[in-house]
Length: 111
Length: 115
Image (cartoon, rainbow over all chains, first blue to last red; front, side, top):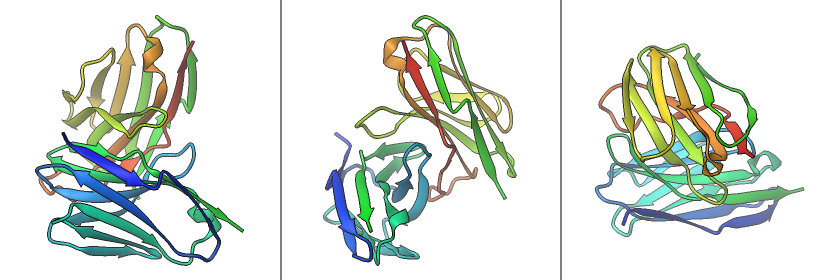
C-alpha cells in the first residue's frame, strides 16, 4: 500500500534553533518527492522537489534530503524564525498526476 | 506573475443543498488544474484533475463533480451535499507538459461546513 508517514506530528522549538522533520514513504513507482509549507488556513506552498537522482536540495534556510534506497527524506530548517511556524507536508508522486500526501508536521517556533 | 483565486473562503451549507466552488488562474495558459480535499488530521486527497478544457479525471468516487468550462476556470459542484463533504477544499494549478517535477501552486482554500 502506498503510504507517506511524517514524524514528529508536532514540534516546538525556540527561535534561532535548527530542526529536522522526517518523511518515510512506501510508494512505488517513485517519481519525485516534494515538501510544502502550509500556514494555518492557507494553501500549501512548494519548498522543494526532488527526483530519484537528487539527494539534496535547498531553498533558503530549508534543506531537503532524499535517500531513495531507504525511502526516507528529511527537511532541515536552519536558524528558525517565528514565521516558520506552520505545517510541513511531504508529498510523494508515483505517476502522472498521482500524489500521496503525508499528514504533516506542525511546527511551532517560540520567541 | 501567476495567481490563483478561490471563493468563497468559507461556506456553511445545510445537508442536501447544492454546492458550487470556483477557482480561477491568471497569468498562465493551459494549466493543469486540481481539486483537493483536506480533512482534519488527514493528508490532502486529490479529488479531480484536468489537463484541458472539458477534460476531467476523477480520482475517487464521491458525491462531487468538477467542470472546466474555460481554460483557467475550474468548478467543483454537488447536487446534494452530505455531512461527509465537510472539509477544506483546495484548488491548485501546475504547468502543463510531460515533466513530472513541476510544483503545484495552491489557492487559499474554501472551508466548507455542512450542517
